[in-house]
Image (cartoon, rainbow, N blue to C red):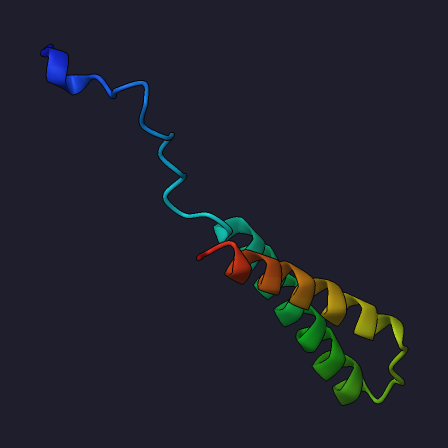
Amino acid sequence: MSWTDDRPPWLPPIPPPQPGRWLIVIGLIILSGSFVFILAVTVVGGTHTLYTLLAIVVGLAFLLGGLLRRR
């Protein structure tokens, strides 16, 4: 091992390679699940509740949080 292989202590730490990726994945899973639920309830002929909007808002919050961390 050479002395050039070590990282100098004055350099800032290397950021993770994929910041926010898990937030984007979780947001997409929540959003797709809620839309599949809405479609299934529509096909069956049931009525929707406003609690499905809560799932959509949470999914969008995760998705936007993940996208804002991707800077």
